[in-house]
Amino acid sequence: MINREILYILAHKLNQEQLARRQQGLYPLPYIINDKTFDIPSYFRTTYQSFITSLINQYNIDESIIDYNLNRCFECYRIFADDYIRRHKYPTQMFELDEKQKKYAFEFYLQIDGM
Image 1 (cartoon, one colour):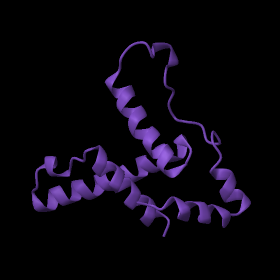
Image 2: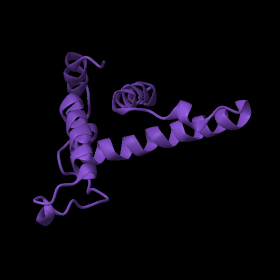
Image 3: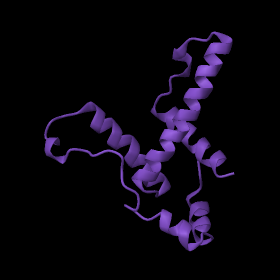
Image 4: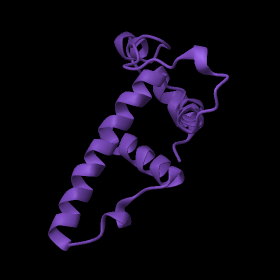
């Protein structure tokens, strides 16, 4: 896991533009969660909120930035998996990730994306 102390130290080394990018609410979300239907149970909303909220708390990054990077991460993963499946004739089920594996993949992506 990424050490929170490292993130704190790195934040002190950022310039003004980089610090501004980390502000909450700076970038608009590409989706809207309908607050009017919170009294109606929803598996997808509950799963989404659990997953995204844990990442927001873990990395202290705005939701829109996490959403953007999750999309990039799993777009790369999808390209890799599709190519591997095509070349080696593996079943697609071998490349399905559970929530914990998705978090590890995202953490790995964030580390290599920053290189």
